[in-house]
Image (cartoon, rainbow, N blue to C red; front, side):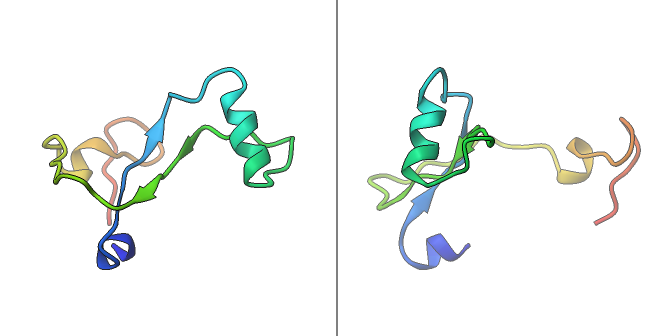
Length: 73
């Protein structure tokens, strides 16, 4: 990931933007008012190394067109 190549870190944050927070972030980033900010990637220098949870394989958690229909990469 390009962020890691620069010695930085990021993570996807979603669900913590409630009430006016999304609108405030939108104004800061000049997002048109008819769009809604629902998530973001903060980027910065990592203080500690954090390992994320073990995830199922992509093919087990992503489907195409309908639930259970395999997704071919």
